[in-house]
Length: 219
Image 1 (cartoon, helix red, strand yellow):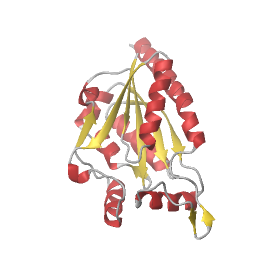
Image 2 (spheres, helix red, strand yellow):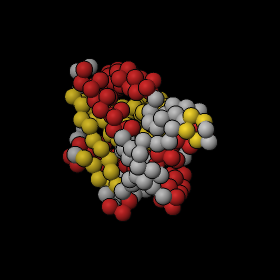
Image 3 (cartoon, helix red, strand yellow):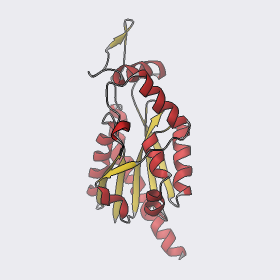
């Protein structure tokens, strides 16, 4: 059984989680391939420190359904067939990131996902429901079979995590420790979220096996 683990990562959170998912898949007997999406135009590539104009452009672009050309590493990964695809969907605002939407609306997605079970990890600060709903719809529009999705969130409350995220993106250090005297949560996925990645991976791959058996039985 072969699975593809597909992700975009600017700050390393999805990348770290994708590596854990690949390890869990291999421990469960799957042949796992990791593929990183990136924006192919150098002018679109995002890096810290960001500025207000760039942050506004990409957050608003995600809300409006903006798409851009993509590249994949390794490029041949998205040209093959798999028994399951595990997709990491970053949250920009409350929508899927521009790279994730760009992939799901592309001919590459239609070729890759058609008839394939797909599971989703929503990498997010807080707002994740709309991201998952949109991604599920795009997966199904591309011909994929959605088999599950869950959020993997940053620590802290709504306000604290928002302040830390803005702080982190606009700086080059590890983020602020305090704001107006109040402690801030660290930037990045919570320890609890990271710890859930292997178990959720096993659940998705079990669902993909069941889906395959059901489809073959119906045929």
